[in-house]
Length: 151
Image (cartoon, rainbow, N blue to C red; front, side, top):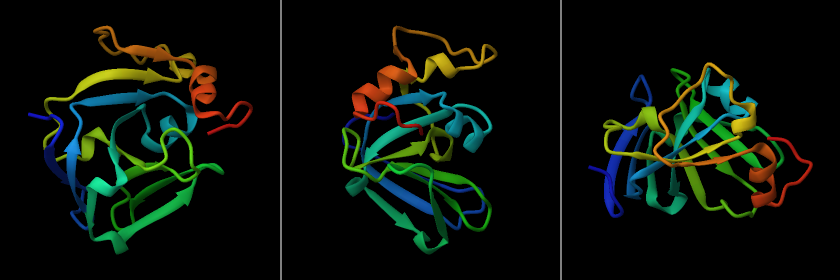
């Protein structure tokens, strides 16, 4: 079961990149922005963890690419599994790393709390709503202080 203070682990498809995460929250979010959809082939289901609470094994196998002037995405050099999204510019989410929910060894026990870029969500994407927040692109960019910038 996930909860504050919980440690979880996970990794890529081939096992070259692994992580141990401390203080894993019991929550996850969904992002529907176009870069996330293209990066994952779907929506990005993400768990935000303080970067300092992550320990990487096989970090030399991680490749990164700036996906905007304020964020980067990373994947395993060997198998191509997406391993994280991270803000690189100091903003509200600086110091956190977003891990795809599917790379946890056990992705059970997480609760959906936010769905962002809902105005970019394809009508074929439907998630059961239990009262989680829905934010548009404009609302997300306003929270980040990036009005007029794309991700």
